[in-house]
Image 1: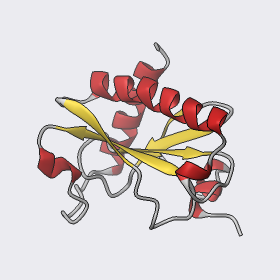
Image 2 (image 1 turned 180 degrees about the vertical axis):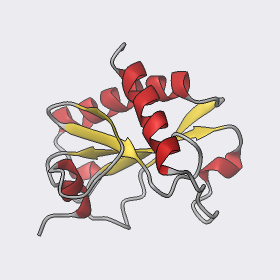
Image 3 (image 1 turned 90 degrees about the vertical axis):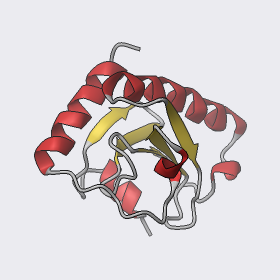
Image 4 (image 1 turned 45 degrees about the vertical axis):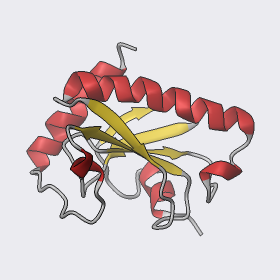
Length: 133
């Protein structure tokens, strides 16, 4: 059965896409911990990041580094945090979270509330910055 991420990749569920290549799809988290919180998912359905083959695993982190730099150029933050939780959806993915404090990585906090216009503008800024890397 296809995961929610596979449905997003196929366009069956709308998302605020920020980047894509042959192997990965990145979009804004609709329940962000901070402005710019982005999910990077593999196009290949693999449940657990550590089950990816070596080549795809390395490419995932290269893609995340490039996207992390684009996010840094698009939102005010000190760093980009990475989290690989993987319990909520059985599809390999990484959270890229702009950080200004350690509290920005607290998944127990209530998510930020952004309007559709804010999500759209933010996705555009990140996508634009990503295209320059």
